[in-house]
Amino acid sequence: SDMGLQEQMARLQENLQSLRPEFARGRGPSLSGQESLGLPDATRALAEMADLEGLLAQMSDADAMSDLDQIDAEALERALGRSARDDLEAMQQVQRELDSQGFLTGQGDALRLSPKAVRRIGRTALRAVFDQIEAHDRGDHGMRRTGAAGEPTGTHRPWRFGDEESIDVIRTVQNATRRRVATHGGPSLEPGDFEVAETETVTRAAVALLVDQSFSMVMNDTWSAAKTMALALHSLT
Picture 1 (cartoon, rainbow, N blue to C red):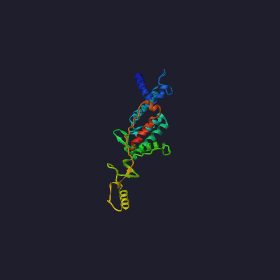
Picture 2: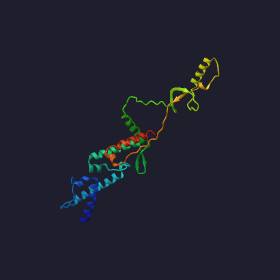
Picture 3: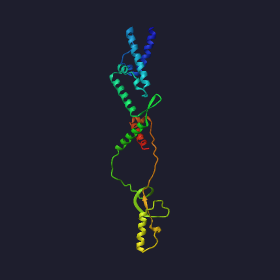
Picture 4: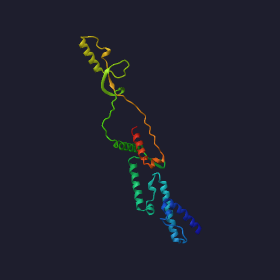
């Protein structure tokens, strides 16, 4: 009946407006008015809206990039133009390349980035962060306090009771030799002959990254930088 046809057209029009919101702003065809459609025009309109409804369902199912090939490229071109089909084909090609290189992994009906992809993104982010660091002259970072777990500093000092540093055998023997030559004999080794090799001070710290997820991060265009820094730090672990 005419009432049933109008109800179907109204329902399909709502679906069309969700896919093409500009129709609701008067820039697309209107289905209101006093003049009714003839049977051929109404049939054609219903067929087009049914295609759009099916296309919308396909795009909703492919929202997680699980299967972009399920989208009807020809229907997409009829609805949104050639540029939309080109974009779809480009996305399909990107998905195939990522999958062939092992950057995608399937989890149920959805696709996720593989650990290999996350590491690649992290390395790229880390490189981008360090590329922005400017080179400066060496500052006053002298550290006179030595440690017990770092690299050797090249300096030595007499051994003291309780020292945990490694005994420098060569300098210890040299000290004993010079002492014996100067004193014409004596014990082979004395406590004063021993020297230890000093090492650098090593400090450790735990790094925690706190990211603000409020809408202001998006408004101030800082959300992308926060994600880049998070991935860069993750690649260091």
